[in-house]
Length: 304
Image (cartoon, rainbow, N blue to C red):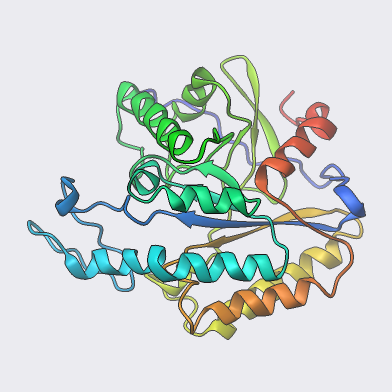
């Protein structure tokens, strides 16, 4: 595996391009619901180990972990429906980060979002990082994940997001596979940008770990729903203020097993109530953001 790559600390510098979002929006908001239930590492599924991070951090070694598995099952059985219904209530079109194995087991988790107008983005096959994979294994994993999502839903994903980190080969392999419009394997900006990969221009839509409900677990940055709602609202308000001059993109990362709990779903509802009070907001699927950027900003690539 090649370890050579070039880091970019400059990006767009002090003068980012004007996004020209639809409806003259100051902020484009991308809600991403990660559907990983059934794709988590589990000895009972024939995996080499059990997932250790769920509602608590604890790795059970050598035997199946029924407690961990049941926490993931909650996301599919309960949280999934609760979040989709809330999106419906506020007319939100979101992106689903879908793991292939999850929808092999529960194809309705791919079919139902499509019925409701959401995007399916490829989130790998198992819920795992690719960083230690050989190039050939990663190539097989990408193809396997795409095939599983397409067979479950009838829709071929055009976006990719690795459970971080990815490998130096990932973007080249996405281009080699074909059909991908963008990836979200970066956390370094608040606007999309182009990179050159294998002689081609490739679009990156950065993702966020701070405006993300995963901070309820592991690091426990957020303990109460109000903590998460406040952070989301504060982030949005700053971007909205700044967006008068320089519109940006805000990503809200969600997981049905986390935000779907009754004590946490209030955070999402409060945020949705807050942003609906503002006129110049574009809530959009990531494929729509990618298509907009590809159409309007191909020549703004700072690396060209």
